[in-house]
Structures are given as structure tokens and as C-alpha cells.
Image (tube, rainbow, N blue to C red):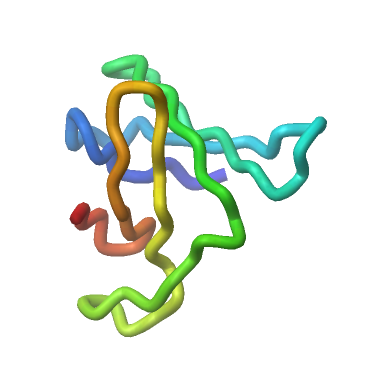
Length: 75
């Protein structure tokens, strides 16, 4: 599995796995800054920069934002 650029620490240490109890939820975590954040796979939208459906809404108890898994931009 390819690692992604973490939206918090900007290192290429961001990975995901699927929640077995709720299959539409993807859990993202960073091995560098230890952020753990959740993505609802139903919330994917079009990224204006990449021009692909690769932007998803991530949230946890402290923060929430849109993040693109290809260009690593956040909003």
C-alpha cells in the first residue's frame, strides 16, 4: 500500500485501513505525528486541482477538513 502525505505533518507517513464494523468508514493514521482521522467513503468529491474524484472529508474530535489523496491539498 502506498503511503500518502499527511495533511498535518506533511510527511509521507499517512496510511489507511477499512473499519470492519462500518465498511464505509476508512481510518487514516500517520506514523510520524500520530494523527488518527476518519473518512466516510460516501463523501468523495471532485478535486479542482487534480481534476479527479480524490478529495474526501476527514474528521476526528479535534478537526475536520477536505483533503485530496493525490495532490495532498487541504481545505
